[in-house]
Image (cartoon, rainbow, N blue to C red):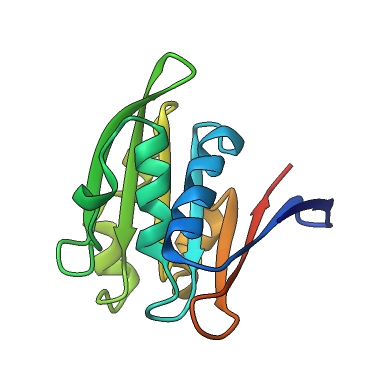
Length: 157
């Protein structure tokens, strides 16, 4: 199920999933919604499917197969190269959970990643003011019990 409604922050697209495969499918749909350059906060508790969503996005961009996409918790950043509408696109999956301050964040160089052909998804980015300022939207994933998830994608207009 999908629903799109305008809000004060931008347009919201809502999805309900009932399995990991459904969440991957939502990620595939996002490949059509997201237009580079974008930096999105990727929010959700541990185990809600943030990386699963990125698997679908990477697959739809021909950047990686779902089983090649893993969480960047310990590496901080995974980069995938693909295409969108026949043009090269870079997909960056970033996890800043382990970073403790803006100084550590600066060494990651997020602003340099945000090139005209880039989609940057940042897990736990909402804990940093500088990332919130760069963000062009957010993806929030909430568990609805069992494997069910509510996914809300808000894109600034």
